[in-house]
Amino acid sequence: MDQSREHLHAPGPSLWPVGFAVGVVVLLVGLVVSTTVVAIGAVIAVVFTVLWVRDIARGRGLVETTVLEPEMRPAPKATPHLSDVRLEDRYPRNVFLELSTLGLGGVVGGVVTLPALGFMIAPAFLKQGVKEQDVGPVSDYPLNKYMVATFDSDPSQGTVARRAAFVRNNGMLGSQPSFTIISSRCAHLGCPVQPNGPKFGSEKKVGDITLQGYLPSGFGCPCHGGQYDTEGNRTAGPPVRALDRYSFSVRNNHLWIGAPFSVSHVDGTGAEALIHKWTYSYPGQHVDGIESWLYPIEPPR
Image (tube, rainbow, N blue to C red; front, side, top):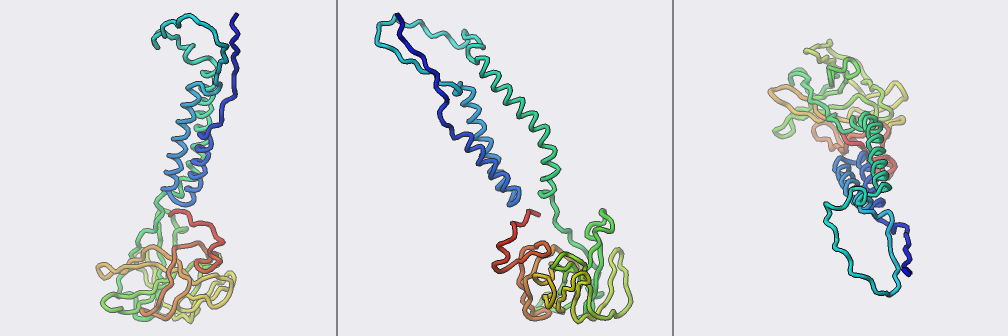
């Protein structure tokens, strides 16, 4: 009498689902931090998914063990060649249905989810850098006076891309030209800042660029009362930092405005000013001090 007893055990614990979950978390964090972290998370998720599926395909779902009483058994028959084993024996129906369900669910989930994720996430990784803007000959900017240069940062977007910058020619700093180029966007909520002072001269148009001279005693925001001095430092009101500035270059005697950057404050004036420069941040965000720890990581640009 065969006294063998067969037992079916629940599958043992597996680390593959945990690894897959960690990969997904790293990927999601990367969407906020950087594309490198996104790639690392994707690799981790894919590797652990492959290992997980491999375990399922090998029939890890149920581990069959047999407890045998000592007895004499006839010599085992020769193991059949793999090609002689029927497909349904190698892949039982339950394993086939399990894999089919997982595969079909993955395909349906991808078809439904990927387009939505693409529309939500892709814009954050598109090249959104500011194009350099030619704002006219250097001779159009008189020494030590502010000119308000109005230009289109992206003409294809129409009037919503209209920008203004407060440009002052500081003369030479050593052998290099020096310009102060301050953004007109308030550091409180982004409202347009205006010069506090009279105009001088007449408005001048150079192509798509409009130039108007001012003699400001500072700059003010008409929305919520933010006030700044002639270097863009906050002097009153709700703004949390100084006005942002633009990088610049001079090529073929033309002034080119480059990418913006944020400023906590400025020491000194003109060409000798010490600018405390930070990564370009949104209005209302502190860029230095303990308050800056309370704000999320800037998305990639």
